[in-house]
Structure formats: structure tokens, C-alpha cells
Amino acid sequence: MLKLIRIRRKNGEKGQALAEFALLIPIFLILLFAIVDFGMGFYSWITVTNSAREGARLGAVAATQQDIIDRVYQTSDLPNESSNMTVTVTNAQGQPGDSVVVQVDYDYDLITPLAGLVQFVSGDILGPTLTFSSTAEMRLE
Image 1 (cartoon, rainbow, N blue to C red):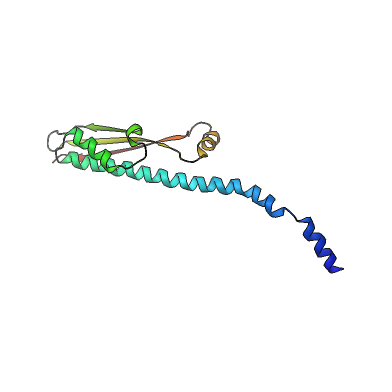
Image 2: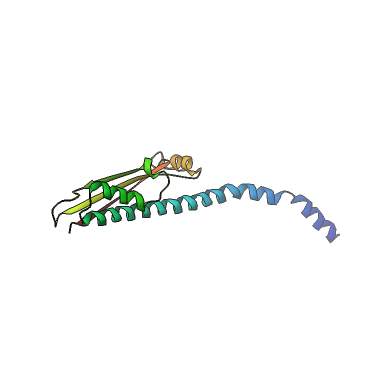
């Protein structure tokens, strides 16, 4: 009799694992996509910061404005950098003691399908494109 009760319970639980999987897989995928986007965005932000610093360092030793811009593009290996990156150089080849300022702006596009979800949840405050900006200033030698 005990065996008969166990068999009945087991038959009533068919498909339970599939139902649980169907409920949890969207949450798991959203979490996975968020981790990937955060990692790629963090990498892009660090790269923009380092590129601005490299350009300012080159500008501190009296390089031309075009040399500084070229160095910024050389030190950044970001996706779509030519269309999404803007470099502004102020006071290149100025007087010793003045500061050269390099500002780099980069538009980062989210790479996973989270863009629409982020835009919906934030009420259009955060869109599918995030702008990373970095400014580096160094004194001319």
C-alpha cells in the first residue's frame, strides 16, 4: 500500500522541473546579460580614462594636437571607436607651466538585449547608449 502512494505522488509531479525551469530561465538570462554588459561597459570606461591620460601625457611634452588625438585613438581598442569617440584637446603646445587638457567622450551601446528592458525600467532615463567621458589635465614641461 505504501508503494502505491509513492507511485501516485510521482505521477502527479510530472513536468514540475520543466515548469520551474521555465519560470527561472528569464531571471537567469537577465542576470547573465547584466553581468556581460556591466563587464564590457566597465572595460570601455577604463579604456576611455587611460586613453585620455595617455593623450595628456603626450601633450605635456609639447606634442601637436593631431599627435595627441592619434595617440588617444591608438591606445583605445574600443568597438566602433571612430564613430562613437570624440576627442577634444585644449592648449596643445602652450607655454611651459600651462596645462594641456584632453577630453574623451565615448558612446557605449549595450551589447545584449537588455537595452530595451533598461530603458523601460528607468523610464527612458537610461537608454541603450551610455556616454563615458574622461578628462585628463597635465602641466606642460
